Amino acid sequence: MAMTDSTGSTWRYRWAHRQNDRRLRAFRAAEDAWQRRDAELRRLRTLAGSFHGSVEAGAGLPMELSPGEVVFWTLPAAQLVEVRHTAVLPAPELTVEPDPPVLRPRRPEGVRVVDAGLAVLTNRRLVLLGGRGRRDWAYGRMTGLSHDPAAPVTLIQVLDRRRTSGLQLPTGVVADFRFKLTLAFADAIEQRAAVVAQLDELIEEHGAARPVRPAVLTPAQARMSARVPGGRRTVAVGAALALIVPAALFESDPPARPGAERASAATSVSTTTPVPPSVAPAVPIGTTTSPKPRHTRATATTKPSRSPQPAADRRCGAPANPFGYDFCGGGQRIRKPARGVCDWFDCVPGFWSGRGWLVQCRDGKVSLTGGRRDACTGHRGFRRTVWT
Image (cartoon, rainbow, N blue to C red; front, side, top):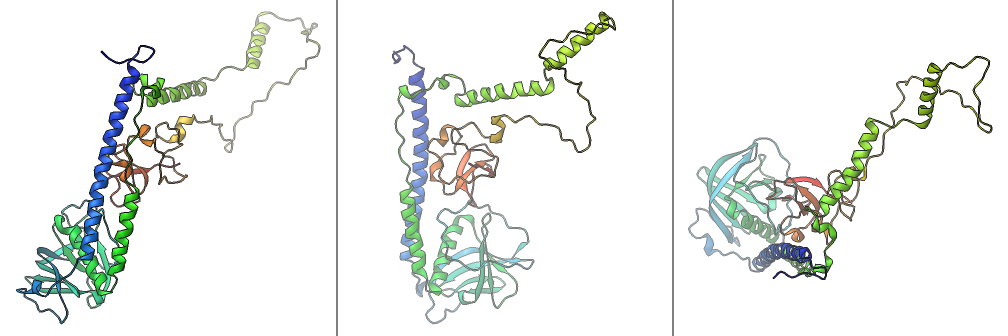
């Protein structure tokens, strides 16, 4: 037998069950995303502390190591690429990317493959041992470094070479290679401690952002709007239509003014019942006659009056919400949205694990990844920013 409240209805219990189930699923998705990110950050932190090369790793390689040079990492499936046009790359940075973007196995425009072979990463340089020869990128001569955010390509500029070149790797090893290249470069300039400190800060910041299990909603918290199909959105749309339709009717067929009705009636009387010229129409005492309004032709500078827009249009397509969030722009970006934002907007799975500001994706869902290169990944890309 279904449970009922004091009024004998069951809709409140059904509403509480649906809401608790939806909130629990969203929490579990956010918790899973948080756990994956936490595990990756701790793996990188462990690797940063134990990243050491060896001379034995270079045994059998068709290259000679310099005194004190050790091998960190090797990969046999690397391609040498060159940029056709002149490019100026940003200076190398010791930035850690704990949540790398999704890469596609493609090559950017203006980049061509010129060789393929074995990539070797040491504490002094990055080397490609290809079929046409050897290509070296010494850390001490490196002036520019750029990791493509959408393709598995890393471009490097050095002082002793005019043409910009780099490596294209399989997508599955790109994140590991880029992090190890950062560590190797940090070792060369004696700044590995800065990378370790950065990872410690990211782990602490991520720990403070762990999702909180939502409180259980009770049937007593159900609102009457939950009985309407569509809930609050249906009520908001109905209220908006109640404002828009009368305004549209008013603009299309404005009502006649009382003065115009009296003037029309007087005109009809004068045409049907002639008044003797010696008798003037009686005017009530205490009233004054106003002169007939002059109709002037509108000039080119006259601006037509506009009726005020209904409040629903000022959200610029955003759903009705008590927080004042809209798509109109001109306000402030939302980095810390209200806790109930997912009750009014359609949030992506793992919404609260995002790091950025509130944006809408192309599939209509909202995400907390604004300002990031991987904003709305898996939701057809970024569409627009949510403002307050």
